[in-house]
Amino acid sequence: MPKKFKGDKSGIAMGAISEAIPCKVLDGDEVLTEQADIDYYKASIKEFEARNRLLGEVNEEGEYVISEDVRRNLALIPKEQLTEGYNLIEAYSRVATKDLFFVIEFEEEIEAGRDDFVASLYIIEKVVGYKNLQSLRSFVAKIVEPKSDEFWNKVRKVFNINPILMPIDEGKYMPLVMQIQKHIEDWYSMEEIVDLSSQIYVMRVLQLLENEGPLGRQIIEEYNREMKLEDLGNVNVAKRYIMLRKILDRVIEQHGGEANVFKEERNKAEIKVIKSEYSAPIRKVETFRAKVQESQRGVLRKKDRQKKEEKASSPAKKAGGAKKKAAGKKADKKAGGSKPKKDKKKENKKEEKKDDKKKYGVGKGLKEIAAVADLILQTAKNVGEVLGRAKTPKIEVVGVPEKLKVADQNKEEALDFLMDAGSGFGEKQLENSTVVNENKVEEVTKQGAGVELVNDAGNTSPIEDIIELGL
Image 1 (cartoon, rainbow, N blue to C red):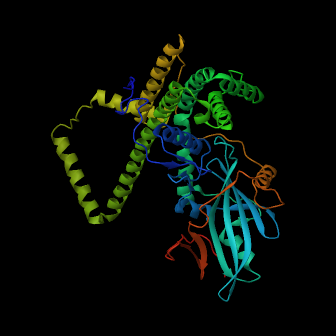
Image 2: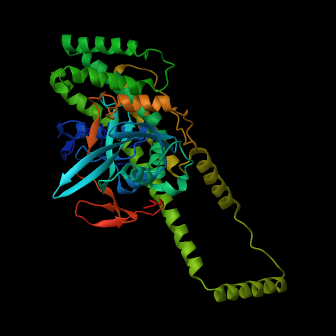
Image 3: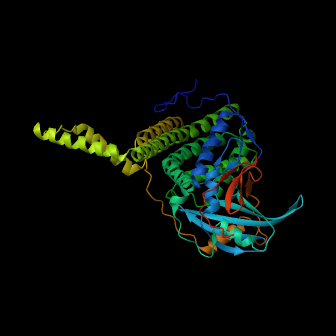
């Protein structure tokens, strides 16, 4: 029976393999069927989403999906035009520390006696950390209009394309801002844990490879060579074990994957346990962060209800309340004006909670994340005993800073990225670029003098009218 380590309160034993629900991977046709593989993949995807501050999420079908609210914000947010070609415009924006790269592609569509112009807006996200994927290209919206000389000008107005980047009021684009901020906070909650878990993972997998004959030794040699090429042998490189784990996985995959590399029966079982134990702490962080975020949303909902109740209350009620308050004060004076004593213990606890929130940005979730750290350290201790290591890695629970400092990206860099990412300008195309859900997502179309969101069923829901089309 798999051992249950101290700090694991999930009720699931570390290394336990339960009945799996098949899961399709991102950017490929592979379907995972074993629970350890699925857990490891999902942990890697969660890391990928948070590290890149992605605008969407990867679903169970292996599709990268951006929500309707976020896509609406992407369509309407101010953008700076970078280039204009025969049939496309490239644009740039920046919000909540994230650079946004856009491409608008034009085409003529003749169907059922109609001759229309179509402008399709795409968002291209620069990514690292998942296989060889370098960018994600996702459909955002499209405008369909009868053919006219004014079409391009209308497109610029609807998609908010400007000669320079206009000031952005982030309060108008909260779904987009909150999506980015969520992933910033997720990454700061899990970065240390992912790095330490990666260190343990690499150490254990390398030991397995030593027992896999010539192929295992070859993989270790290639891993060491790539580590030196990327200058990751230096112990002072921050979070280097995250990158080393990626290298090791990539080299194993190049040799046919774990099914081809690990031939020994004992090693086949052990690699599944290693994967399961790697992903367990990350799943816990995800669960804890979700609880904290839901708690924060609950506070916001409560404040909204209170505001509505205050607005609904009549002036007469307010006046009546004021009279009662005044009468109460008079009664207090007659009684001697004594005030109830404050409970100092409760006050001290409140101050401690405030300090936690200021320092870590997670409130009561801090203790839960510390419990995850304890789980990882216990895992490391057990592994260390197996491998004869006297010391265990050190982990610190790092809080979420209020703002992430990111250097501004200039026009030339933005343009270079768009060209490299296969926007269509020039003739450069990136083989690893992915177009996701182009035929499934909703479309933005111009209806009369306004803009509406049209879904596949033909139903419409109005977009907030913040753009004057001037038609």
